[in-house]
Picture 1 (cartoon, rainbow, N blue to C red):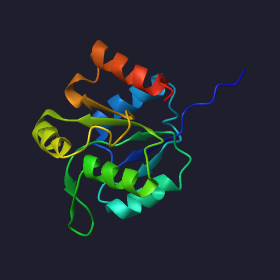
Picture 2: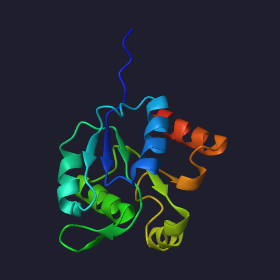
Picture 3: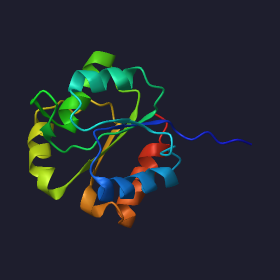
Picture 4: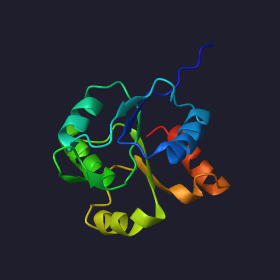
Length: 148
């Protein structure tokens, strides 16, 4: 029996050290990270949205980290995901969003402005610094296995 791995789009990934940790974990839980499509850091939101919408992905890896895109606009994972879900009319993807301790306060402020139903239970948020801990690993594994 052939087991198909989950197709992934990585939107504006973190640097190599963190990226490798997260990629290894997602690969372990059935994601095809070797063939994952990557949207480069600095890509404007609309271009990233277009790439995701036209992909065959079932899983999105969307780090929260804020930075500037190539036009100078401030972008972050949560704002991107909110725009994506609005344009798509829902969230058909399982989304994993790593957040660093440094970015946590900004994430919490941005998240407080959202409706609890914005992502329909499709988003799981994990602290980068806790990515190797058993409880975080189980959280991600359960999230990716859930069939909502």
